[in-house]
Image 1 (cartoon, rainbow, N blue to C red):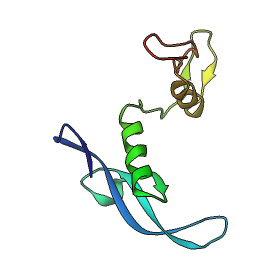
Image 2: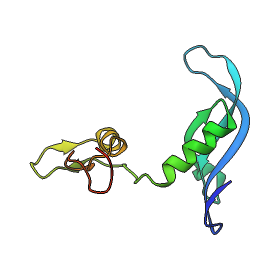
Image 3: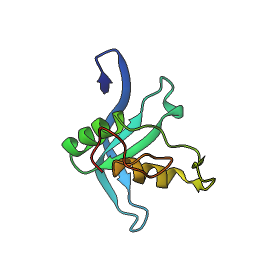
Image 4: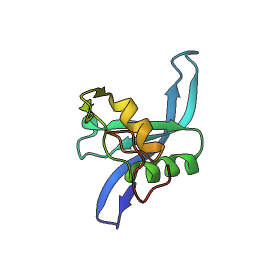
Length: 105
């Protein structure tokens, strides 16, 4: 489990079988799920070949805002969640696409 300051659980990492959709082969991988108490309500962050990559994915995601819905930029254009995430990862403001202060562009 991955927690911040030891008080709140954010992710659960499990090692188990995963089926690749394109080739239908079954591989042993690390599955990272967002944690909720009820297991059926959990949703995956991703699948990783190595434990360190799974831990790094969790650490990177802890600082990332949730981009779940489209937003409207100041000029009225719709910005999709994928575009918001790409802008944030590039160090730009997710809504406007301009460089954020305090982060490299």
